Length: 618
Image (tube, rainbow, N blue to C red; front, side, top):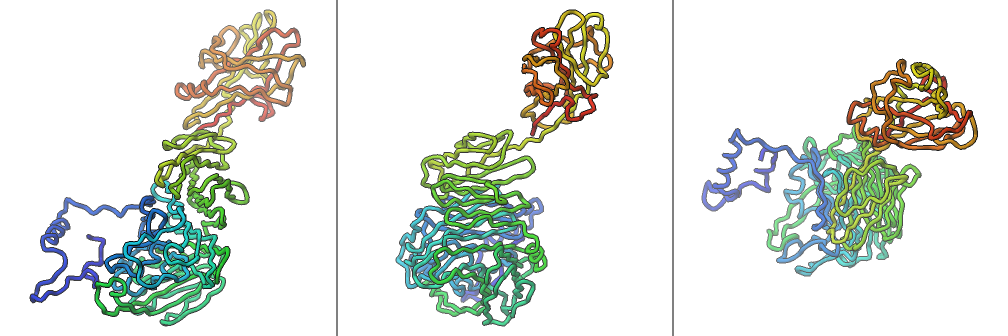
């Protein structure tokens, strides 16, 4: 109630009756309830929700953002383009064929005679040949001959939406087009492809058709140049990079950015209409309004027409110009196989796959996203997180849609029922069972790993016999040998995992031999040390921790190579405990007098050769 400024407008104003002082309108009982609610200090107004939702069973999409809302009207074999009956909605032909309704601070935009005066064959968002005339057949289902109408939503905020339409079942024309919307927060990305017609008429996409203020002089700025505000103005404006339309009220400005700088056709006009031409039971009174329309032409009988633009609700002319100079939106593809776009600031990529065939969308010239079936797909990368949403807008598929993303993940942290994660690397692959899904969005979430290379905080080797109390913690090598008394040597290493914040996915010990006594094959073993309470400068054979469980074995590599041992479970256990991991390394057998190996210690002057614990985590 507090936000609605339209009460008392000509649309909602109470209407005088034959009884002096008595008006028809909102009921007195209801009015009393509303006034009491408004006066109740215990009740506070809820904030406007920020949410985007694909209403798959209605072929509708609603986006709500701070300061505006946007509604996409589509049709399919399931939903008629419009409904006509009882003499109501006589000119509704195009209302469901991709119309986009933008609601902002101009709350009366669609009131005060809008429907009686707007050109119903040039509704905003539609790709139109202006066909459709006469009185429709009552209650006829004006269907799309194609099924594709819907999209994938993600995080309740973003969506990739597609409509593959043919006008033949509505107006009878040959016009067909593949239309996409990518709802990227405060940016409404529109792109079309595969636009074709054989009727010998001009096809155009209506970028805007906005009702203006009472004087019709809302300022239109194109590429920084103010256009005439006189009614009746029209112009073909080449190479348009951006445009801006001043709102009728504060907060109703709209910016437009054109990725391919097309020719844009502008028209400022006064239109008159009669309500009974819209609904037969209405009055025969004539009403008038002023409109500003913007359109891009796909030409007469186009074969492969396309368009793209980005709507920027609420932006000033300066803000629109700034966006055009440094856009965060990129159109990745407009073809008969796929339409795709990305938003770099939000890490979003959206794609509509139009065919039941393998298709890959590239980002930056490199393969990024693939699907083998018709699908709407939306991904978002944020830090180490990747989320992907997949939907079947046709609502007809009975098997799985196979998706591949050219990224490597360390873990799948969540997946809706029906999503099977097939692999995490070198690419992510998932199969989405959409049978009976009714257009629902399926979401899976992945983690990219952070990798830390931890140097040992302590290392030393020990020797038996007469050297059993000697400390070798300051040497540059860790000597390993299994031999008679006085000649046996083994090494200990300690790593501190305190810097790891998250869940460990993998951990491996990396040792680099600096010298090897013989070329005959030798095997070394790594064990968990029974204690972490040893010191590098005090460790000896006699006080060394006892041996624990075997962690792994390896064949000693040549100098210049490394030995790598998986210690994931032990590292995870250490992270959950005292954060310290102690490892004991020794030879598996007595390989004779030359059966020794020297691994680089942390004191070794070659940093890359020093022992490391390489940890991947999220």
